Amino acid sequence: MNFVIGLVIALASMLGGFAALGGHLPVIWQPWEFVIIGGSALGTFIIANPLYTIKDSGKALVEAILDRAPKERDHLDLLAVLHMLMRELRTNGRSGVEAHVDKPDESDIFKAFPKVLANEAITSFVCDYTRLIIIGNAKPHEIEALMDEELQTILRDKTKPYYALNAIAESLPALGIVAAVLGVIHAMGALDQSPELLGALIGAALVGTFAGIFMSYGVVAPLATKIKITREKQMRSFVIVKQTLLAFMAGAMPQIALEYGRKTIPSKERPSIDQVETETAPGGGSGESREAA
Image (cartoon, rainbow, N blue to C red; front, side, top):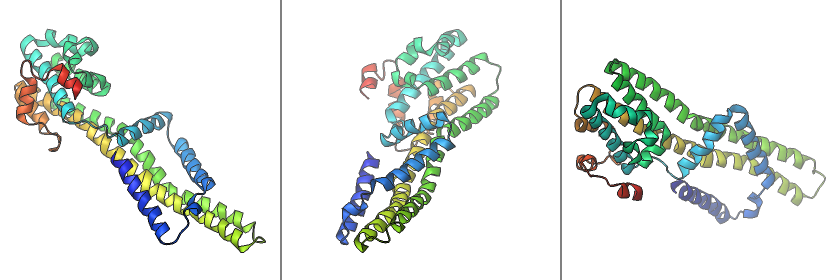
């Protein structure tokens, strides 16, 4: 929503200012200039990136525009899943937890929190490291090193769309110049025409430079930044799992271990201690309230 509002403000300010200066808005509408710039940008984007990154960029754009980053409710659900797994491990040991992490789709713990279960990446992360804990041979510092390495890999994969779109943003001003040069070439072929026609052709050519710069700094670059922010927020869930499980491995009680994870959540999205205690208390956080959230 913020992206749409910001884009409307930018377009209204730019076009309104141009009109207020006495400019004629129809002059800016040069569809073939936009085709040259947009088509060239799309082509270079496809050339530069593998199919996986191209598909993920589309997904990342939707996530950024719709602001699909974890909210307070999502953090509470994740903390509740971790608490139930740790409590089960302390109470029933390996036999009590193994079935949950081997088949999370059939686990009562995960099925009680459908949003967590729907996130395949975070569910796999939780199950993998819970499985390592119940094996019992790995040291906490070894698990931490492995987690850090995996988090770096996940972050690199998640931010590939940002770097791909940022590269396109940097190329758009130059592509705008290409479109403008082609327009000038076209205008030079009409030197024998009337000054009015020649002026219109040169004006149309200059629209290419304007369009390339605006598309770069006014659309694609802000979108790329929004993608980076959204994907980095999504990484917070993995950090919560990391800090919680490491604290548990170090001997902390489940409720104390949750506090290690809770503290990694940014203050504006961080649930209070009372909220976490209510959510993890027996009977707390009903399935209906989670679904409604």
